[in-house]
Image (cartoon, rainbow, N blue to C red):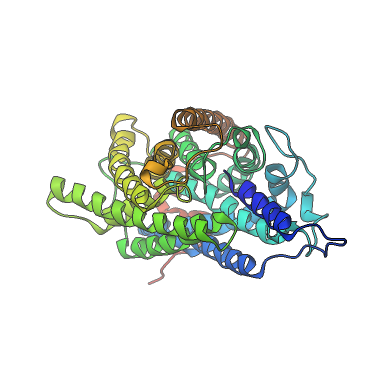
Length: 430
C-alpha cells in the first residue's frame, strides 16, 4: 500500500505481461513518469523556498523577518548535504525493521542507469530530499523570534538523523510499519506528526516569547503570509500527487483530494471565525487551507473526492480548536501553530484514512486480508509510536543542543530582533 510497493508491483506486472523472452534489454526509466517526478520535485522544493519562508515571515514581527527566512534557507542547504551523506541511506537502504544501513552513502553505488521502480534512483533521491528539507523547516514556526542560529542548525541536523530518517524507514523504506501496511500516502506520520510533536516539545523547552499569549504584536505582513500559503497550496500538488511516483490515475486522484480538502478547510475556518467574531480574517482563511492540506496528506491517494472534503472539514474544525488548546490550556508558545495545524492535522488524517479508504466512501480499500478495524488499529499504533519517538528524541536533542551551543537567544538579542543580532542585516532598510 506504500509508494515503493505500488511502483514495484507495477514493474512486476509489466514484466509478466511481456511474456518470456530469450534476452531482456536493460531496464530504462519511463519517460512520462520521470518527467512528472522532475516536476513534482521542483514543486515540493517550492513549498519551502520560498513558500514556507514567506508564510512564516509574514506572521512574525518586522525585526525578525529575515531570521525566519534565513532559517528556512539554511535548513534547506544543511538537509541536502545530510541527506546525501547518510539520511537517504538510513531511510531507504537495507531491510532492517527499525533503521536502514549505509549502503547508499553518498550515492556511491548509484549511477544514471540505476532505477527505483520506473524512475531513476537519483530522481527518487531528490524527490525524497525535498521532503527531508521541508520537515525540519516546518519546526521553525515553533521557535521563531527567540532561538540561537547555531541551535537551529545543530538541532535540525541531528533531528534529521535521529527522528526523521528512522520514521521514514519505518513507514516508506521497508521498516516495521510498512510491513504492517500502515497507510501514509505522503507524510501524515513521516512529515507532519514528527514535525508537529517535535515543535511542541521544542517550544516548551525553549520557553515563551515575552508577552505570551496576550501581549504579542500582530503579524507584520499578512499579505506575505497569503503569498506563501498560495505557494504551499500549489507545491502540495507535487507533495501528494508526486507520492504516486508515477504519472497515473493514483497521482490524479491524490491531486484532486488534496485540492478539495484545502478548499473545504479554508471555508470552514472562515465560517468558524465569522460565527465567533462576525468577520473572517485572511490569516485565518489561509491557516485553514494549510490545515486541510496537512490533514489530507496521509490519505490523499487512498480516498475519493468526498473523502477529501470530509478530511478538509474535519481538519479545519479540529485544528482551529487545537490552536487555542495549545496556547491557553497547555500554555506552550508554539508560535506559528506547527503542532496545532501540521501535527494535529497529520495525525487526524492518519486516523481517518482507516475509515475513508473504504470503497463505501470512494476509497481504494485495504491490503489483502485486512479490513477497517484492522487498519484502524495499525493507524493508531503508528500514531502512538511516532508521537512517542518524536517527543522523547526531541527532548533529548534539545538538552544536548542547549549544553553544546545554547538554545535560547540572549534577552538583548531578542529585544533587538534576531535579524540584526544574529545576522547583521534587516529585511528592509529605510
